[in-house]
Length: 339
Image (cartoon, rainbow, N blue to C red):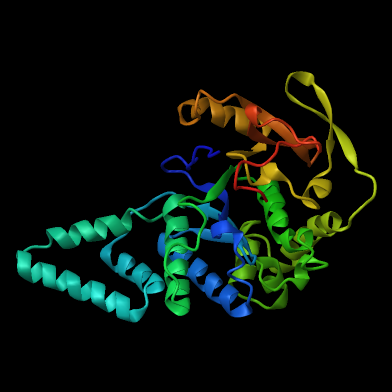
């Protein structure tokens, strides 16, 4: 079951947790070389679309990305060409530019060229365009090298969760992403898995480290950011016998016992990937009411479904009541969108 695609309002930035999965969950990216090329296309797509990647994790059959999409701005032709150089290989870029020159000579004007440029500029600062650009580029590269035909990605869409753009929520989702290999039994600690932004940032300076520092804003350096992230991930990575909870006051004064964030991060948390919205109860209720038309009325939406305790308050999600509840007390994942 698909949920509506939520996008940031014009003139505002938006933060998303994006998940892309392979067809039939096939392990297409097991080797280091495949993951290296996948990361290359992820970075190229981000540069082309003008989005900021905070955190990522490359698994053998799926990809997690925490990304911020800035407000769409004006982009002149020089800026467009610069972004095209980041995405396209030289041979492909030369072919495009030659085609544009040919159109100008044949038409005697630049209308077709202007239309082509407008289509490219429309792909900037948009979460759907970013995911599509990444998936198409990675698939074309994989197919060319392996003589494979067809899509390597499951379905035509990707999963995305629109996040409250606060430090605490971004930090929680980054930790969830970095702990993916630990939950899968592939690493004892997040730092031991090389193909995540945390593993890469701990190993050496570079784009991964810059992205994690950007989570905290320009006033925070790598050392402070590392300690903050390490503290969240360390508690979650430690498996415990007893499930720790904490009482939290919900809306209308209702008190609930919710698991600590570290408890939720240490296991699969469906609402981290299967909900359209994730954040505080106030954020979800306000966003839901403002964008009510974007959510199918035939579904029974549970606003502010509690997920965990975050900073003494409830971290909540928007859930579909018809999906029922699992034995663990959390809403089960939407079809094809498990963590």
